[in-house]
Structure formats: C-alpha cells, structure tokens
Image 1: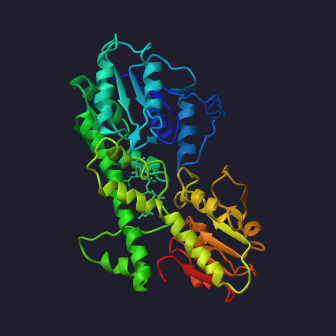
Image 2: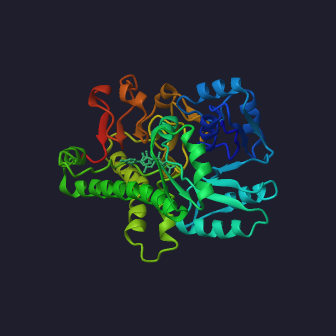
Image 3: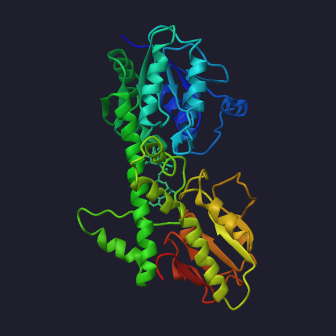
Length: 411
Ligand code: SAJ
C-alpha cells in the first residue's frame, strides 16, 4: 500500500528547505513548508530561492511542477512535523528559543500519534527536556531526533548520500521516521535513542573544531621555528594514521564555532573543548597582527586594505560567524577597509567588485579561499605592496614583482 504522509517542515533555511524539497520528490507525500518570514515564502512562491545552494534551484523547479509542495506562514495539521530552526549558543549552552516556539505552534494542531522530528542541533540534555515536555501534551505524539549532517555547498549530495543517525523515542517513531528518511536517503539509516543521536552530532563538530585548533596552534609554533607549516602538515599527513587539518584565519559557519559549546556549559570538567574554541577564536587577531607588522615594515604608508572574501569558507555565499567580521573590525581601527567577495551579496559592508576593490589598494588580506582567487591576476594593481594569504591558496606567479605575497604559516 502506498503511504500518503503529510509532512510539515518548520523552518525553511539552509537545512529545512532542501529537506522539504527532497521529501516532495516523492509524489505520495504532501509537503508543507512553514516559515515565519513572509519575504521567504513570497520568494519561494515566485519559484526563486532565498539563498544559493548547489542544485537547489533545479530541485525547486522540478518539485513545483508536481504540485505537492506548498510554502506558507501558517502551520498545517500534519502526520509529521520536521523542525529545522536555528539553535544559537548562549554562555556555553544551547538556546532553545526557536525550537520551543516551533513546538508551541505544533501543539494546538498536532493529531494523535503524529511524529515530531527535530533536525536542529541541540545539546544531548535538551532531548531529555523536550521528551519530558511532549509527554505533558494533551495529545500523544512521538519524537525522533535526526540531526542534520549536510555541509553547505554540497548540501543536497550529503543529504542524500550521508549516513543518518536517527534517535527514536518509540517503535512508532522509528516506523514513521524510517518511511520519511528512506524516501530520499541513499546512505545508511542508523537508529539509536535521541540523547545519543544529539551527542553524536555535537561530537562530530567538536572533532572538527578541536582538530582545526590543533592546526592553528601548530601554525603559531611554526613562527617560533621559522618553518613552513603547510609543508610540515603535508609531510605529517603522509603517515597513515595522521590527518592534521588546515590552519586558517579562524573558524566560521553556523556549526563548528557553536555546537561544541553545547558540551561545555553543562559539563564543568570539559577543558580541551573550550581551549580549542578559544584558539580558533584567536586567529583573526593573529592574522591582523601579521598584517600590522608587515605594514610597519613597508616603505610606503599603507592606507587602503582590501579584504578578499568574507564568506566563512570557500565557494559559499554564507558569512555567518565568518572570521572576516572580526578581521575587518580590527583593521578599521588603522586603515580604510574595502571588502570584496564573488558570492556574498548582502554583508555588513558594501561588497565591491574585485577590480574596483583592488584599484589603488596598498595591501590585501585573503580571508576566504574562493576558487576564483586561485586564478586571479593581481598584476594590474600597481600600488599593491603586499598580500597576506591566510589560506595558502595564492601563488607568486599571480603577482608582479612589486607585490610581496606573504603566506600565513610560512615565515
Ligand atoms: N576550517 C578550517 N580548517 C579546516 C577545515 C575547516 O579552518 O581544516 C574552517 C572553514 O574555513 C570554516 C569552518 O572551519 O570557516 C567550518 O567549515 P567546515 O567545512 O569544516 O564545516 P561547516 O560548518 O560548513 O559544516 C559542518 C560539517 N560538520 C563536519 O564536517 C563534522 C557538516 O557536516 C555539518 O552538517 C555542519 O557543520 C552542521 O550543520 O553542523
């Protein structure tokens, strides 16, 4: 028998929208996308996306033709509610404001035996809190926690192909969740309880944060030793059990600088994790200090500095928690700062084109290693005295002899 689930996706952001569209590929599902933003809903109604993501526009156009996806600012009564709202960090704890708002909206419309799936990243303890809360509802509902695990820039591929960890609160939750996820996931579906599922998700991002911190600490050590850290890391990674991550100007995005804190607030014994997060947070200042040193050594005065890339990582238009913000704030104390990025559209500062930004610039700092920068020609910019590359992505042959290329980590 074909199932005809009605699924409401609460929160049409970077995770909710692609998930809703992947679900709506199944013609037997009716998918209602809910968001509080009228602007987002009207953009979607016009067949456009509120943000860019690889392959998402084509998927939206395909699903629109099938007529089983609707976007609205009103929440519909459904069989399944999939929550994908932000969970910021507040003093080392997860801030559940948006999750609680979503649950308040669901409560009056929830039918008996409906399934609530939480995809937002939360602290393990939060799953216990939420399950206790749901038990007090007048209607019996089931709960599953399936933390999102897709990487911005390759979201659709990872949503389809990654293994999913699904924490289920009851056999009924497992039955419905398996129907929902098996409709589009080609990777494995692994089941556990909700608290373990939350713990696994925070562990994954903590693994990454701690490893990036190690790379950043090694980069600082390389200055005392006078060695090229990039070469040293490449050589160390030739060992079969070593995988040192890449150092950089700091860690951005909505996950890695935030989620590991969810272990710190509730667990006073956590020492390594907060130290790692602080090392990562120290990197914007470290690269600004290098630029200041370089500008003092410079023969001609440095007045205009260009920031190349403000996105939190290469080839995405997302600048949430980007180290670029702290770098710009710091540089503005001394210099006129001009910002350029090939993908980011709305930022705290005006985004200039590459040529416009570098015209008459005295110096530049590359914050984001967008692919276009690897091929960019810096030779026409006659006043450019030096460029600080925080990602080891530029080559000397992109520059004229009058411009010095300084790669961070290669003193
Ligand atoms: N970065 C480094 N050095 C590295 C790797 C990354 O400095 O070696 C920086 C990046 O430049 C960026 C930040 O870290 O500023 C985070 O980038 P990322 O590519 O490591 O991760 P995100 O935030 O885009 O996505 C992560 C992913 N988690 C893991 O890889 C464990 C993704 O799978 C999760 O779904 C996502 O977090 C999330 O939503 O939690």
